[in-house]
Length: 533
Ligand SMILES: *Cc1c(COP(=O)(O)O)cnc(C)c1O
Image (cartoon, rainbow, N blue to C red; front, side, top):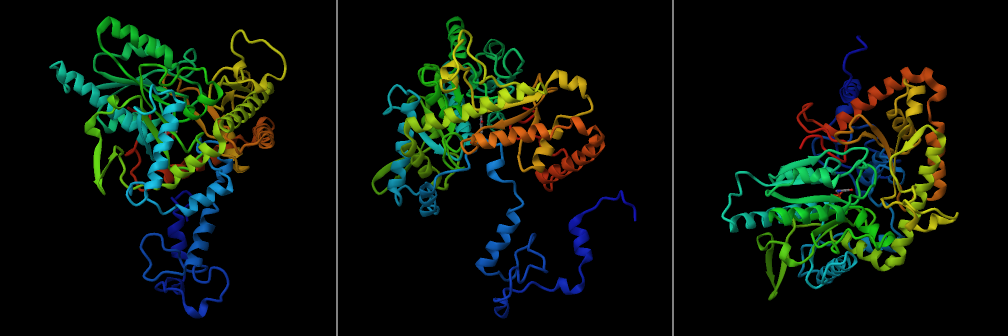
């Protein structure tokens, strides 16, 4: 047998079974009910490709799926994700009590709808909408849907302006401007809704994010808007909303074209208001017409809720709003989905009233403090360079020890630590590849992604850790120790082994991501951005 042939484990297992294993699946045999664990599927195949003719009892189904899922990574050790993975027990109780409610059934669940509306008012107020009463918004499944809606509204308004001026909306068509560091949801909007996507390349000088001056080279009369990101998924840097707005003010004065801003505050929408309340990135900037955030990131709800809010009703064109008439009253709907779970919205409201302003501030400050701790420790090794800047002091801020509790001392940004091998390290150990750190940490249970920066910095790879609430200081210590002891300095002889391991890793993840797709038939994505636009 050739050892190099392609091995399909499913086929080999099937071929290795004797006929006794192939018998038709029976439902749970009552006489087996007292048999131990896995009575039936201990030796028979678990249904994977067709529905079994008879089912198994609920306990057994639960146990089977529960076991299989134990192979998933631990959400708490998933430092790749911004998504919240912990809520206190009473929140879990509330979630379970409401797990079957559909948000769209507004007449059946009027109180749920009421709570939805309260969340919108709270966010509109937190983000300084001119009048909470006049602002309009909706829950979404996440920031992605919210970003699509924000983009669609800007596209419609551009079309209306063009038509009013007697100009074509097709030749040339609309475009939208954003940094090349944009999260994949932003590029999806452009592609799905047929808007030309103009990606502004990033540079070290622009802090790996949108450079407003450079962005102006991409703006013209067909620009429906600029997406500004608070903060970048790569390094956590906030994009400069005010500076972008000032340049667009100048542009409007010169040309008469008014280009609005939508702020993608997926993460920052729940950090900046609490940590840097004086930073004007929100509706205080008049050019900001809409803002989205992910309730399930630093909003501290569970996965399944985002929000989009418009400054006033004027910025949400009427054609995007559907009127639902029921029981003599009218409800409005402007979302891409119809049915959706209501519990993430209830969990959002739970966190808002449970934590309050001071609670969110305390959580964000703790996250930032831990992120600074990790950043400083990594830089002290000399092996790593940290690209995020939240541990650096603002120019002009000298000062005493104990500053760690005063966020005003430090540069603004998300509690994200992006780092890479230092130049000195790369020179000394050119054979050691940074992506191996990801693989080695994975063996310890940590999920820390290693990926390329966006164009024009794609040659630079970064490792990224998102510090979330559950990652207490003790865990940060442990993570740091693992990043360091996992280092390969003493193990150059294992270079070959690592290369083999990485090879397998890549094949496996390709298989998982693409499923049955032909190679090349999808756009390869790092998970945060797509390469093409
Ligand atoms: C996470 C994220 C998104 C996508 O948000 P979802 O809530 O996952 O749909 C978009 N933009 C930025 C900047 C993000 O961090």
